[in-house]
Figure (cartoon, rainbow, N blue to C red):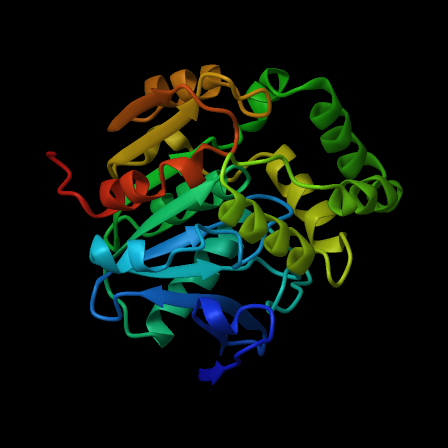
Length: 281
């Protein structure tokens, strides 16, 4: 396994961008920021987002004692494409990444489409994941009716005719991002979107297909403590999804705030603090 520091113009002021070559030859790209001696938190951004899609003030991670690894999924940003994507394969990728970084125990944090990826890692690596935090996470396939109609249609399209989804997803990726309510966060959000689409929407087509098919694990079997954050005004992943996850997961706590889908930016410090807080807190 080879570590490759790779600073880029887009993010050189926001931390160190790195890549790890895992068995099989693929490289995983990520930003490594915060306290280098802090507790590791693997952060999985949303669909159509990249390692840059995080709060622009990385000192927050340091303040709460977090070493934040903002990790890009196959085909996104600095990460190489994968021939076949599944949530189980993602969990194996994260096992190999943390092995390469000599990280034994860590927390996982997933926003939106990153939520299922966080749960997949918690399910696959129960002895290594100390806590999972899911913010506005997408639902299991059985609950897709809770998503807005346009997203349901897109997920059906990527399953039946993925080539036809490229153009609408590319158009969506070129649209301005929804405001987070903070100008600096908006710029970070926008730069993260641009970076995620710089090689086109192929990776997101594959991702939505994966999320719409059976996940390959039972969320009810996840014993790791999970904290769920959902926004009362979220029309993308409404809080009813969080309520269902709370009932399905054996050790879950639900936090509902007066926010929309971008609540992770407004509650960044709280979410990171939750990731490293003792399970009994």
